[in-house]
Image (cartoon, rainbow, N blue to C red; front, side, top):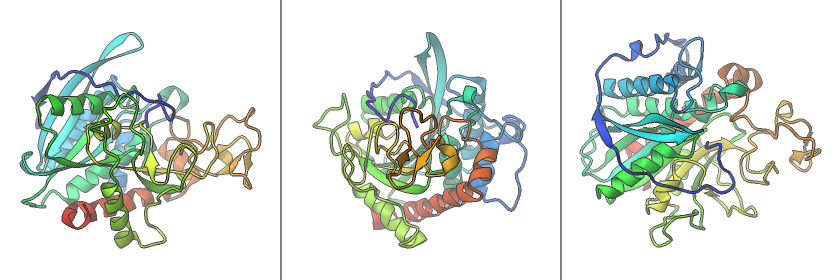
Length: 370
């Protein structure tokens, strides 16, 4: 989740620099990552390896050595699953410094085939506050890797499945903006039929699926912009089949600035919607909460320990002037596996595993859902 928004995010697309081929070194060499508990799900093991500072990598702020280590880890996992992997390097400015990052792109078949993208950003933010980016967005990356692994032997002749780990999301959606601009320049956007964004898919009270806002995002070409709901609706139907009515993805109701089921431009789906690609965005939060900026989904939980004072009746802070926590997990000291498992035992692992199952269903049978 990009720290710059939940207000107004400009989608500024940068110029293409280039792509590099991947290496084939082993994933184990990327940080001497230890093997997790075999009783845990595969996705949760990846989450531990990505976000635990004692068992894996930890915080992964854009442009840092840990972010580079994470990219290397993801690259080698995807290569090891048998995918054709490309590295797309780019640079960006942050706090007066020129920094480097990369997108990791894996294709299951010919990129000339109709392509469905599943993406998750791998950088984190707020390390100074104690965040290890477990939910934002270690969870999204871990689930994406588990899905890619499970589908690695799928041989669909019609669709290409493309898994993308985006860099530098937390500093202005730099990786996704760069990627979309490169597709446009190379005239390779037309075969992309859907983009699914995994950002903070676990930790909050509910797991939602959104489509792009009905009002075009700022700085978008209104003629190209897509607010189609078919990808969102397909994921909802897949979740019903796999999880049942009670546990299915949630479509949030109408709120003042967010009509039912839509989302803002604060994550990597934004540039795709601006380019005319139907998107779906999966996130775990609680849209019913009246947070710092209203009911925008930024407050994630009713758990009282994550509020200075919580008013259950109004689903808001008891005192907006004195509130410090606002029910937020992302970008705080609570976004670590240890803290999350203490506050919500089992929640994160269960939510991640549910997301993995739903996406395996949809991506295994895209013609049924899209």
